[in-house]
Length: 65
Image (cartoon, rainbow, N blue to C red; front, top):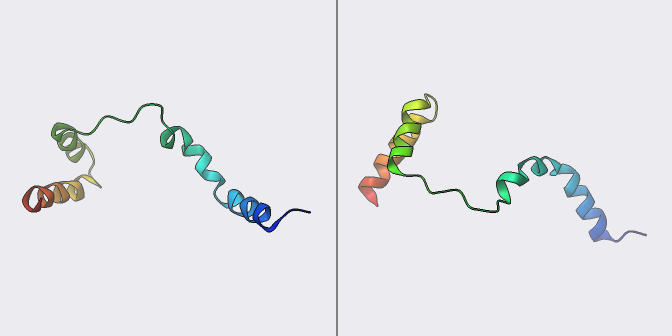
């Protein structure tokens, strides 16, 4: 008979099975390189949806940090 813990793990592993799609991004051999200011500026220029929010955040961080 399976213990409570085994059934609990099975229950949640079924619900979070989509995370296996992201395992190559989460469990990396080498970490990603940090973004430079030019990388951020390029992202702001290229992304019409999230670019303005990143621009406001980067301005906020440059003033208050």
